[in-house]
Image 1 (spheres, one colour):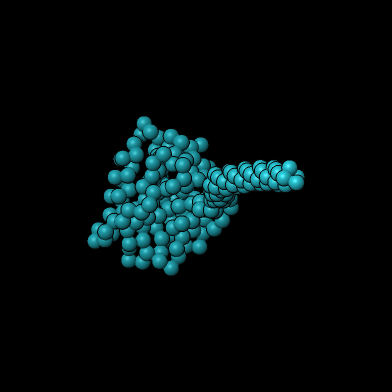
Image 2 (image 1 turned 135 degrees about the vertical axis):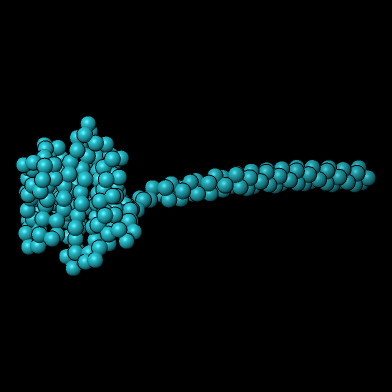
Length: 224
């Protein structure tokens, strides 16, 4: 009887030990699994944080490239065509070695040696005197001083005004002046172009306003 009780007690003790071992193994396995999941979650979080700035930087770069690729607004205005060159008739001077484009409604005549006059067919008080010089005959400085003196003589009591020079690249040098008169104004221009120095003196009336047309014709003068 005592042997049976001893045997039963031994069996119960052994069963308890085995159950305890199984419980420790299960707990250890559960702990290891939990630790592994925690490490994986931390790695995924770190990877996500490292990737986010790169994605943001790429987005900013794309925005900058789009801003750079935007076409610039065109600010330059096209140059206006000279009406004399497009509408005028090529005309050769009989007293000087030059040619130019004469607009409709104007005529050319020789005034005296080395001086021509282009005048309005409707009113010969509207005219432009044309003088040309070769480089060996006169330089630009001489012609510039001469035109100023000519304009001052037209109205000694008025002030001479300098206007913007010609912008076209074909003119090596140029100056433009203006002085008021009793019934209008006198405009003088000197320019050097293709080895020819040209002096223009324009007489215009306030109610006529033909100075621009005379200047356009004068700009087309070239050595013959």
